[in-house]
Image (cartoon, rainbow, N blue to C red; front, side, top):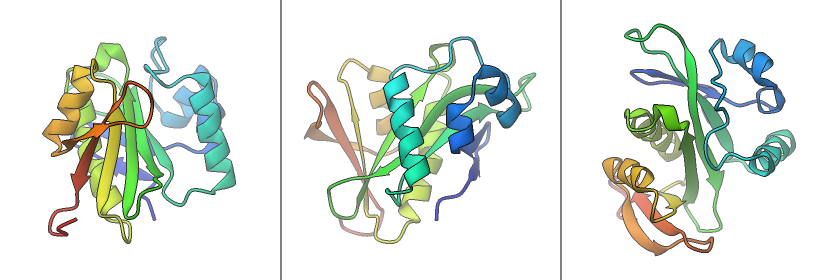
Length: 176
């Protein structure tokens, strides 16, 4: 079972419920106890993706699906702020889950994605039978590739969507 909340050094990852996914900006701020920047949602998290997340959350058809909203909760900063999102989903490959993530542009290049992905990968590897985590990204998203590399992912060829590339991380000690 996936944790509903994950704490990192500077982030509070809050599992999105249907209520959170459907919330307007003001309600989202209340539910997360955090400021929601006017630039929300982050790149690649469009209305179609959010609608699919709502469907998956409501139907509970994917036992691995969870998305967390990333709230910066850093004592060195003045307030809690929603900075990004990321999560997991099942894949068609045995023993493998997909990871995806996105960070608001004004919060990129601060290590938040690296920090969050590290904890999400740990949560993924705690699931029974999961031996690999896979991600796809676009080759021009250098920051995304850097996040994957910092977390030990290795290039694995072309991705599934046109123009994407795949990265894989094998669970340590499994020989997978």
